[in-house]
Length: 427
Image 1: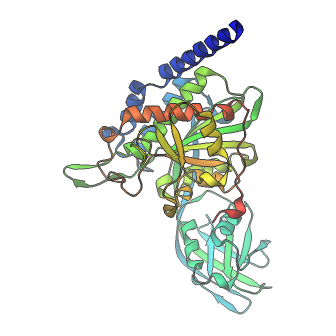
Image 2 (image 1 turned 45 degrees about the vertical axis):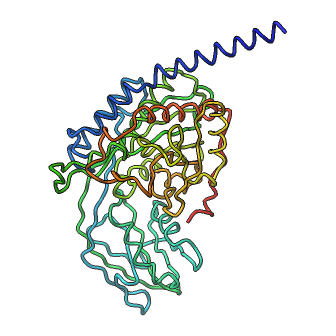
Image 3 (image 1 turned 90 degrees about the vertical axis):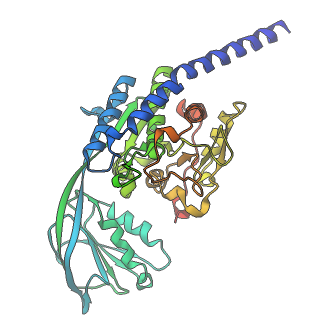
C-alpha cells in the first residue's frame, strides 16, 4: 500500500509539473502578441503578391528563428520560395485526326508563351475514362512532371470547361499537359496555343525540429498566412485584417513550435509551415506537397479559424474529414481527462475538408485534417473588414492551442501513427 501511495504522489507531481510547463510556454500574453502583430493594419490584410504579405512572412520567419527551429532541407532561409505563372490564353486551335480542336474540346497547361505540339513531339498518352473522378485525375496528370496528351472521355463534356481552374496560376515548369475531349485515340494531332505569361514570386515559411529516432517520419503543423488585403472602405475601414482567418492558425503554429522545441520530446521530425496563397487556390500547400515525400508524412494538423467559440462552446473544436482516418480518435484519447473535446465536422455540406490546405496532402494519402472552431453557418466576421483581433476569444484560443499540443503527443513521440486516407474514396 505505501508503494501505491508513493506512485500516486509521483503521478500527481508529474501531472502538475507538466501542466505548469505547458501553461508557461503557451500563454495568453504571447498568443495575444503574435495574433495582434499578424492581424495588425501594418500587414495591410496580407494579400498575396503585396508588401503586406512580405512583412508577415518576415515576422513569421523571425518567430521561427527565435523559437530555435531549423530550416527546411538546411536551406539558408525559412522562406520556401517558388514561382507561379499566370497564363492568359490568347488563342488555341488544332486538329486530332479529322476533329477540329478549340477551347470547347481541348485545354492545355503550359508555361510556354507559344506552344506547338503534334504526334511527333514525343508526348506520352494518358486517358481519363468514363466514371473516373475528372478533376482528381486531371490534377494527377498535371502534377506528373511529364509531357502528356490526356484523352478525356466525352461523357465529361459538361464538366470539361471546369478544367480551366487549373490554369489560373500554375508552377514554373518545363512540362506541358494537353487535354482532348474524345472517345478515339488520334494517330495524328496538332495543338497550337498562345498565352500571355506573367511570372509571380511567392513563399511559404517553413521550419523544422529534427526527430531523434524517426527523423524520416514527419508530423506537420500548418496554417495559411495570406488573406484578402484591402477593399472599398466600410465605415472608414478598408483592411481585411484576417485575425481569425487565418492569423489565428499561424499564431497556433508559432506557439506549438515554441512548445515542442522547449519540451524536446519529439521522436519524429516536426514541420511547421505557414502557407501562402490559400485564398487563391491553395498554391502554397500544393507547392509544399511537391517538396515532400507523402509516404513519410505521418500526420498533418492544419489549423484554421480557432479564434471564436465552436457551436459546442468553449474548450471544444472540430476536425474536418474526421471519418476518413482514425486520427481524431487518437487525439481524443490523448485529451482524456482534460475537459477538452474534439468533434467531427458539423458542417459536412460545406465540404470543409476540401477547402483548406490539408486537402492537398490528404489526396496523397496523408492523414491530413483541419482543426477549427468556426461556426461556418453563422461566422459574421468571416471575410469582412471586421475580422480583427478584438473580436476573438483569446483565452479560449489559448486553451485550444494547448489542447492541440496535448492531443498530438503520442504522434509526435512516435507511439501512434494514424491510418492513411483512402484516396479512392475522395471526390
